[in-house]
Image 1 (tube, rainbow, N blue to C red):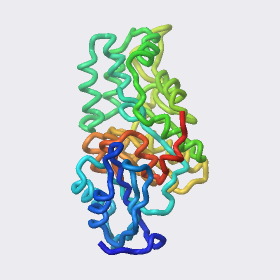
Image 2: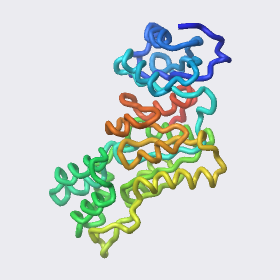
Image 3: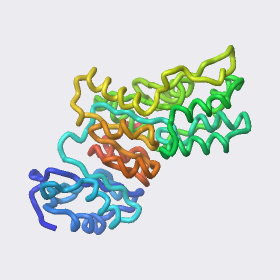
Image 4: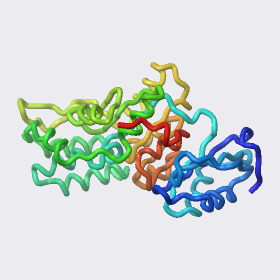
Length: 303
């Protein structure tokens, strides 16, 4: 470890731990593994801190983060350039990211097929099968389910992920635009996006037959390609640079969106996604995405 003045640091390593589990000794161990470090900066006492540093030319940011994670068991680490960390456009997946459940699996419980549908969902999210045909197959199993079941699922079976509202409300309070993008359904996203505070949402539309599900989805399906296209469309509409964007998700249909973003974060993600993303959060809640952007705990929006 070599010391340098903080103003010369080109990169930052952000460490995020369970509350009260990050201390000066841990920061010291992390700093010893980085070149040209400056004094750490606390973002939240005992929970999150930045270590400014300047890597050697050609250093792999993801490899540095992986190395630090190996040294610091149970602590999330993100490594990125120090400039431009606060993003102006945020796109987030819904199921198993902004909420703790998979909505289609919860609907399937009402027709006695939750385990069967959940197994298909898991394979699709792992990237083992194509998303679009897997979605059509699962939706077909829901034919004749009353539309009112959706509200029951939201009220009784859906929980927001810890930190979801704080993340979105804080980014919006600082001028960012937020969009919930889901391979799920507008019947869910419209309500859940409002609960969390997103500016807008994009998802699939279920075909209805009166007050029941018809067992099909409006084509074309909003999937992996469409999520990336939404990010590009909103970025261009707002006149933003690619580096101004943040995207997060957990499944294979989030991969292209995550790769397209200036900062793509795999959140408690499937192995293929965690391996591919520029950054990953394996332990913390969604407020970790604020710390990664350099927000201090005192800047969080209260909700």
